[in-house]
Length: 480
Ligand SMILES: [Zn+2]
Ligand SMILES: [Zn+2]
Ligand SMILES: [Zn+2]
Image 1 (cartoon, rainbow, N blue to C red):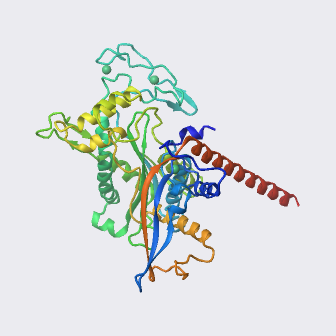
Image 2 (image 1 turned 30 degrees about the vertical axis):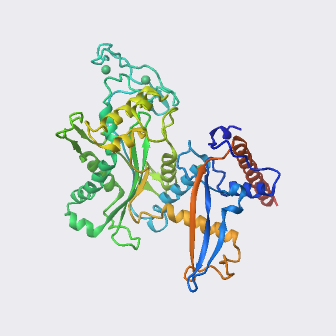
Image 3 (image 1 turned 45 degrees about the vertical axis):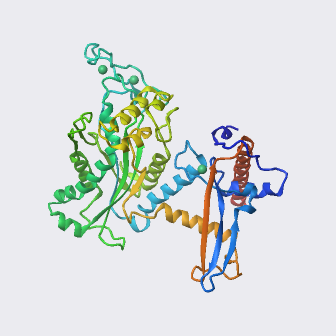
């Protein structure tokens, strides 16, 4: 069982849950309710109800009655490397959100899947493919042509394997433009914001109408995710959809096609520029013009499998995969850097350490003075959200969570939930007060983490056994 090693364990002074007591069953059901989260949040607290008519307060629930006085809740981490079970739930929600914006009421609306890359900051080891053949990374033609100003040979004949740790690393670290790489990540959100302003203008220009007219015809809605490339630069993947104005799910007029949208996305992305001028008083801030990479990939989303277009399922799966993926680099910190000395102690590869150092330096008072660069140094300068969407794209994570909460509540109270006076729970009759304190995260001891992970394994086996049983039954009934 390797899962145990990835589980966080804190506060070794406390004893693990007693496996022989009644508490154990309750504890195990709590672990199951978190979806076998690897680092559950431990809460202490109470829920009280106040009768709005009389002002009388009665207790509804208190964690004093729970094993160790603690209620476990799932950490809800998006990252697969941080918590596989919670990441799985997040991935499912993300897939649903994307899908819901491309099917049902939106099934006939023009939609495009687009990828916005970062420009080059210097040559890096890369895995390039033609068909199924992996090509040499940077083949040598003439040695002298392949020397950088620092005298380094910047050719590479290797056909890199997809797990090659050299991928994304610069061939010459002195040539690599670290300030631009970090500032691109830091400003990626602003570049996107400008893109969303330009896109309708470019769409109007391509159609030969004024922007005011365009706004009467359509609104642009999107969902986008950020993904780190191996070189540590952020890419955006977005589903961009055209709707008629209003909230009655109508498509725009027929001449606004997905192909037209592709053209508008490409030209709008190419036009986005962000000029960072060397501000007076910030001598260390480089003069820089930021833009997206040269090639913005656009592909129409279709509901059949013809041609080059992507299917709804493929697009939803891509987005869900990108959102839970992180830069899988050993030694990369997952929390903000506190001081420059701690950067020196990081065990991550030199390339990422240099990005972190650069962000830290650029965030200094005598550089940009922008403390966000220091705050997000551990994230290589990127401080944005990993998933954002325009209003009315489709459903939300909050709505998905509410559905699950209601479902669990209905399971716990099949005859409806009651208040402490025995009446059916009604928020116009009682005020429900919840008071929670976080007492810690993770399991309290190694033994407890072990128990939680073996409970997870048993649940998985049970699930597999169930699905196999159903499969056998299904096969049998087909044969009958
Ligand atoms: Zn979790
Ligand atoms: Zn290489
Ligand atoms: Zn060089």
